Image 1 (cartoon, one colour):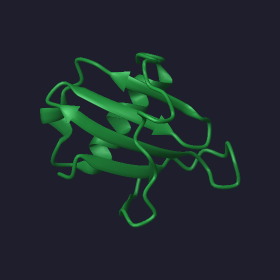
Image 2 (cartoon, helix red, strand yellow):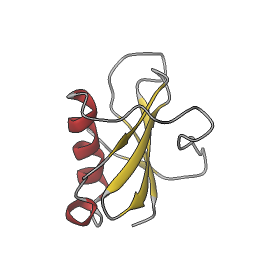
Image 3 (cartoon, rainbow, N blue to C red):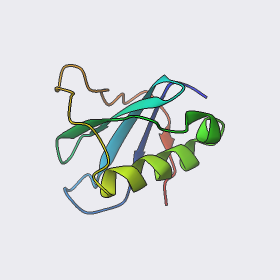
Length: 93
């Protein structure tokens, strides 16, 4: 799996929906950036190895922790992963 995935949850936060970028940092840490809500965070103790081969599983696992507010808010816009129009969009729903 690439260390960067991006997807749209289909939630209607903006005209674009809810676009999220996820970056795998290491085997237990991921960073995410909710482009449309301007929220970024780090998920520690995240089981990357469980989800690494199935991008949609990774996206759903990230959103589960994000929705439960189980993330650190130690990122800034400059350190958060950025949306890449050239990267494949994972089908989330």
